[in-house]
Length: 462
Ligand code: SAH
Ligand code: SF4
Ligand code: F3S
Image 1 (spheres, rainbow, N blue to C red):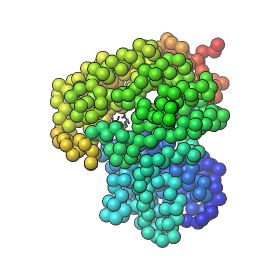
Image 2: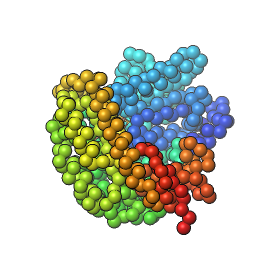
Image 3: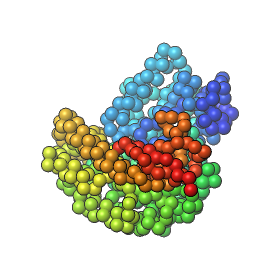
Image 4: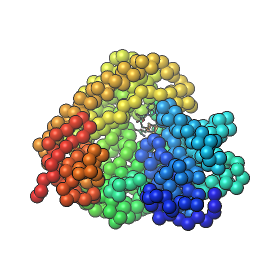
């Protein structure tokens, strides 16, 4: 690795024929996992760029490959492993100087294995150590020895680092507002991989959102594992959302993830009062049975969750809801599984992310319970909840047909150049003819049809 490399303008420039990287060391960054990881990769890109590293979108052009990893489920880790093996084979056959690094949530737990036992990688860096990346990369380059920093911090929020939004559509951006998680849900590895909860200074968040708006962005998603426990002195999460919403009525605000146990009435009031705070909440329930929720250590019962949904719908009529569900958790009986189906049928979520339980080492569930639901039962139950949710999503989308909705135009749709896509404030994706629209504009779209995942519509000229 050469020191003091010229700084590339941004990662997008590397999408061109990579002339900027020719003859220079360059870093390729690949991201797995949740939105927090996407946001972290933007911080990593910024740290590297500021330190003078080149960045490329093409792994074949890279001298350093960094994989930002996820450990949430076994199959997430397996995907990353396969990718690491692929790059290691490449290194052995064609590019002995290639350096391979693991960032993020797998770093903590697997560093010994990845570095020493399997010799899969040269660099391992945990989520709180990204400022140290340039030093670690140079150390590997100079000494040929592996380097590691997986220390977790109680303070690090990267508040002063301006993310490089290298994969952004220029309209919608993630803004990280807190890190870590103290909740210790029985199934979850995140508190182990990301450490203690800490909130970022509110002033820097509001400033970042203002800068994004000035740069043409029209939507921010405030990110944390449990945004409801955000606190910076007197500023709680509801106050923070309110403050960001005052920046411009043209800037939409979303957030993720909101934990049901402390989703406040004040926050729901902010949704009602501020038209640019989107009429949508992701409120992961995980399960429909209170005993299972107790075993999961989620901190609420099924009835308390249902009461929260009622409150949200009373305060914010028409609010759209999504959720996460885990099926086949330790000891889950057929009757308990039926309670998840009943809860879904009663609540009628607009959307759901559904998973089979995957035991994670060191978690409370791994230490105390047996992972005793057979794989084929987990699969069957998962298929049942997916089938139910698809029919509910389709029904909800059909109810949209005939209405005119305000859509924030994001850009070309995946299917066709002549069509654009964008989302309603209830987070539904709409596809429509491009006409004279530009990304970043708000369009009035009459919904004419749908699938369970997408709405189709015609732009209404006012
Ligand atoms: N902080 C968020 C969740 C982040 S993880 C919250 O509390 O809601 C995203 C989702 O992955 C979780 O909501 C859960 O549904 C799922 N998940 C987490 N650990 C899991 C595990 N061990 N097996 C299967 N799914 C899991
Ligand atoms: Fe995991 Fe629970 Fe924290 Fe969410 S709130 S990240 S599920 S421990
Ligand atoms: Fe995965 Fe870490 Fe996010 S485990 S889901 S990348 S917080």
